[in-house]
Length: 218
Image (cartoon, rainbow, N blue to C red; front, side, top):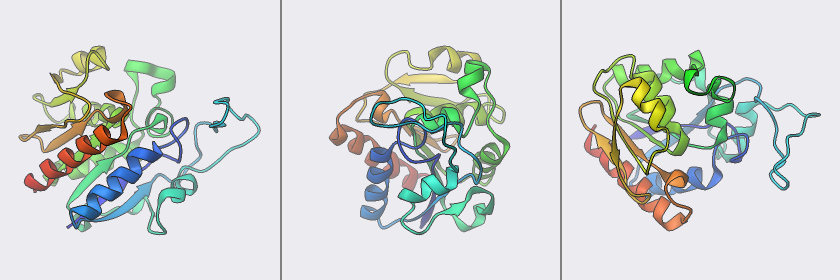
């Protein structure tokens, strides 16, 4: 079994959340699932100094090159992903979801997903292969798949993204930060991760639950 793991850079402020990425790798290895990290090969929206959280205007960076910091020497460009080679897709959270995979920063709830990202999500869905996501990554799945399904369900803590989900016609179940929610009909599983808790142990519990459900959906 092998999953593709979609990244959006390196670091919560302008890319993928590092802790979520590492805990996902750990969980996949514990479940004897091979994985290949992947990311778009284009320029990042911005560069953030993760010490003082200020934007660095003098620098530009590449999403794929930044993601390769967490790629374990295996990362491939997103446009090289062939769905037939994988058994599932996992999308990591972080501000890179808003900045590098969509135009959410500028458009908010009227955002669009960049074509290379959207096409991969839809390809896995149409192939009936499970899609797992965490934290901010759920807006990608909800937006993309709401165009293909009129009965999409996700799990979330509190009112996070409530207006967006309502706009998209997505049904929301309330869960805890250490849990996941599985929409078995659409083969979509998500866990809140840092949108539900700041405790790594609880985030790990949620990711482990997500992967367990994904395995059951294959």
